[in-house]
Image (cartoon, rainbow, N blue to C red; front, side, top):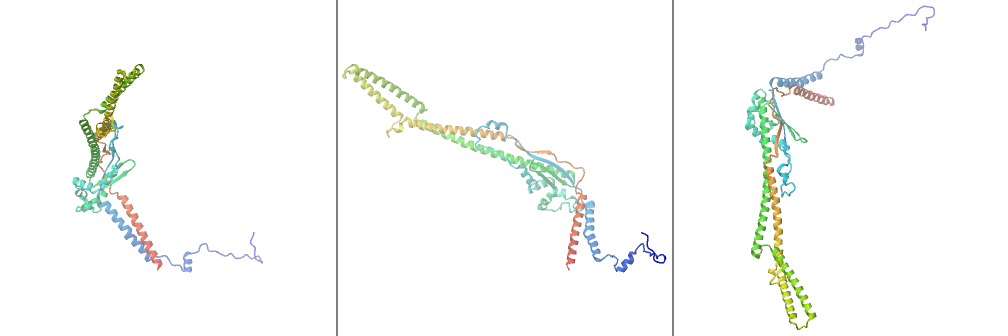
Length: 405
């Protein structure tokens, strides 16, 4: 739409608008002062330099110029257990009379043994840890061992030298040993493996000796019991003057059976005479006397087998047979126990001849060619991050206290 003109036809004056407004003039009009550094800014800068830059520079300088190189030797091993096969399987179906087997957490024992004072003392005697680990102490007192270190100091420093990784599922122990010379690290790792193998052999020997000792004790007990039963059997035979009462008993019963048959025959013969002759016939009297004699003989023979008379009870064959059978049961049990104990002893001895547990080393101690410790870059970054965090917490604490005032 065209702009309207004022009456009279004269053109209206055009107003000039400034294209840019000066910021300086605006700030001057508003009264805003220029930003200048203040004391708190200098305080933050100085504290950052003192708490972060200078310590980080000191750490980096020490790591790269003073810290001595350390070499690592790696090894890995496990405890191998033989299956209880071999000669012991011959007696698998027989009672073992105390021969038992159990599993021992050998890897757990080794894990603690490697970190023990005994291991430190043994390795120290073998390679002289103080002389080996204290060589760079004059230039590197942080990572090196003090030459005047006590046994307790050496035990504490041992955790920095030996690193152990134990995998319970597989039973594998991984070992890393560090020293200031590659051959020293390898020598320390080798001594640790040798002592671990010695410990496993010792534990295996103790277990075998315990097994054999227990089996021998059971065998001695069973042998003594068998000897006692045999002596009782000999005393019984000497006292009764009978080798095998069961044979005498069988013969006695045969005599009684024959007498009973003779008695039956005599009674039949008498009955036949009674029916055909008079009662005064001498043959009937003879038959009666024969029957009475046979009956008395049967009674006497039965008395030998067993009687109720107290005066003759000690001579009853039934008592003798009963005592003999009791001795037979005792002897049979003692013989079976002795056979079982002897089988268990033979199995224990057979297992003792086998090395059923030993240290299986699948990675021998390595000899390093390059020093991988100390990890200078990693330690430097960790130190810087820790110092920066500490400085940040310090600054926040100071400003929070300042704001409360």
